[in-house]
Image: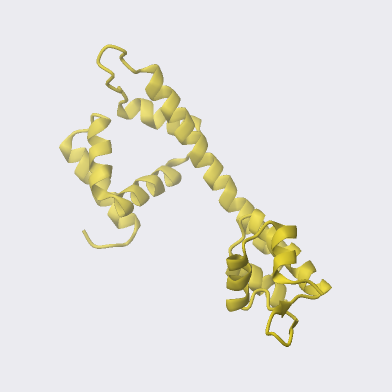
Length: 179
């Protein structure tokens, strides 16, 4: 049998993490001592090892619980979905990386003003592998999360007021929200 301290040291987790896993039913101790201390079995330890592996892969706790507790969700389906999410995130990070490089290339050392226009931005997006649908989602998410920043960003690209309003309107429509 293992104590909570044994598992914390072995898996480099905090005590509060294991207590949280217990509270949500993800890892419940097999038994308790007379003093009401948790004791974990070899099976519990194996389960914690699986939990840690899935967590390192970025799988949310609720999906880990479903995977370990039921046969309804397939491990490969969950992992393929996570891989797809990671690929989207990597694509977006590559886009950001290229955008920063382009911005730095155009940086004027005397004024320290960044120069980026619509054409450069669209070119960088396309070279990063983003298609029109992904660019629409980019604008939609920016509009959703920070409308003022979206407006400022479009102005920064040198886009005129009418086109800005049109882009923002389309971004809101993509989310199926009223203007």
